[in-house]
Image (spheres, rainbow, N blue to C red):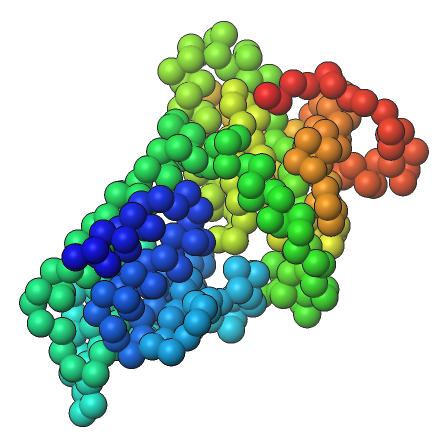
Length: 342
């Protein structure tokens, strides 16, 4: 009993999603002693969903393994390539597959938004009902902790990540060494992306939307814009709402041209989207590279200055801070400060 209490204390004491998945597989291994246990999540775009292994732990492993968060999506297995996992995912129920030497138990990994993955437990023999109830109980606690993380880390209106969660993620990506350029430049869907870029998005004339149509319609615009963002960016890009009409995206791609192309696609998608009552809005976007050892404030300030330039030169455009500096349109050490994001 003391071991169970210890495992639950460890699980509920975590505030990091990556560590939480590792703690989940560790808890299950220590409680039921399987041959292996893994957490597989569904990632990717509609029609091209893949399995991403978030944590895998064998019986003799000292530390958990996982697929890299910046892995080439083509290297990940399609959902249909793991039919037992897919069946568990779609049915949202436990599935056990017996074998000549042991069994594999698949359990749905649920969140407040539905089933998002599968827990795969390989055992030397079928687990009895008591052990299964124990594992299901651990998964329920895991879901509750995930829900608390969502509550503290996500914007209540749009469901995007909030400012509170930005700094920690930023420091992680700014410490990642730049990778080799993508093997297919311009194709972030299949490229092996090499660096992170930060984009700041500001809705043009949003105050006029609130003044003319009211704050209820203004909130609807913010919610719909967040949906456009989700549809335009990839699963490994991090999307934030900092407050008001300011949004931030941490995207991964091989270079400045690819970052510009991704943000331009988003800008054009917003421009072509028909918002109820308001009909059309535009956004101004500024972006910068995330440098090794960068600070969140420094990177946001660079992107912010590019946004300010865009707003003063016609709006409805994407501007790169480094390009503006190269062209002599911005002084690299000038402080903007004209747009307060926080």
